[in-house]
Amino acid sequence: MNIRKYKESDRSKLIELWKNVFPNERSHNEPSKVLEAKLAVDDLIIVAEEDGGLIGSCMAGYDGHRGWLYSVGVVEEFRRNGAGSKLVKYAIATLKEIGCIKVNLQIRSTNVEVASFYKSLGFAVEERLSMGVLIK
Image (tube, rainbow, N blue to C red; front, top):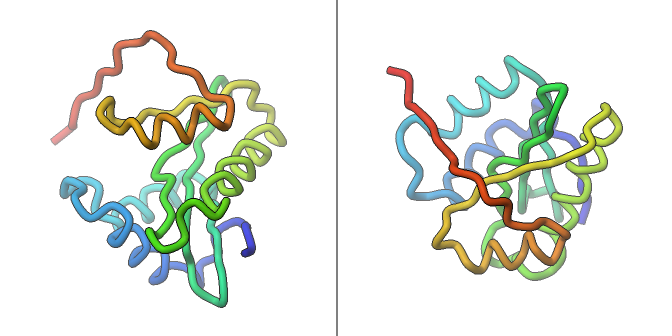
């Protein structure tokens, strides 16, 4: 397994990966739109590849104050083999290199399995109220 930054030649494979790993996303999270928007800002997209195919990905963000992880996902048949952990650790190391000292992420409160995964990597629940607005 190879963990590395996204390359433009990964585009179609990454879009397919996201459609596979996040099948029930809302229309504003359509993979090709998300990818275009992300690349307009920066290239902090990490991928996991094996045998020429993408098996996982993680987007990272940094606003100069805090880092964020988004869309961390691994295709089902490659889960529980270390790919997710390697993606997250690579993303955190990348954020640290550019000056980030704290990384945040959000998951659905009902996603207990994923919460356990992040706790195993040192993340802790912080009592915050997460709010958002969809701009139309």
